Length: 215
Length: 93
Image: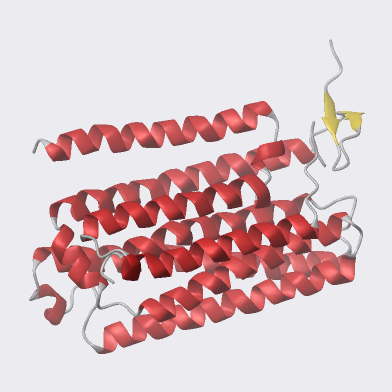
């Protein structure tokens, strides 16, 4: 039987004796997970598209009620945080472990700021009686009810992913400290970086759909 | 296996591109006053450019092995089929 070969992070081949430390396999598995996530969000985007097609004017009006500046600041924060997380991964591969940890820490701080701004936005909406099931929202037109329903579900699900991302990055920091992640063994960090890129990708599409169509 | 090693310079150039496209996202409605439907179309076009930059350079899909690229394309095609079938259904209902 032909010997199965795996590859380390530098691209050197070695014989597979078990399924530990299989860099390609672990990365591939994580990509599959991300694709299932893409399907989940994809269906929500499809739901948005259907209702936008049916109530485009009301979706535009409802979008105008959202704070585009807060959404915009969050867009820039998430964008820069993707950059810092990418640099963290790059620094680890270049054996600059301390710099890598700093960049992960900076990403965590930006993720927390993102969530805080989002929480503030939600609290303002809720204060004005705009939340799924509220009497004020239920009294509005169907298009507006659908817009805000989708807004809370989709940004809420995205926010949940941000919270998971913060937890994962905190775990990465612990692993760096304990030596569980090191330059020659960094697949966990690579996958968490992929996850954070994915969280950013979702926001790239969410932002214009919810905030910009009514500007 | 191809190993994707980015550089700080490349990452920074991509960041600059993403920031530029984000600026375009903000400026588009003041440059062209369009209906919500057309605005969404233009905005999504810019968003997809940003998505492509992130996927290609930050997620290193460009330098990944062929079968991984194939899986990503397959997932996108399945999603597009969902959109197409439901879109036709909604348009005729």
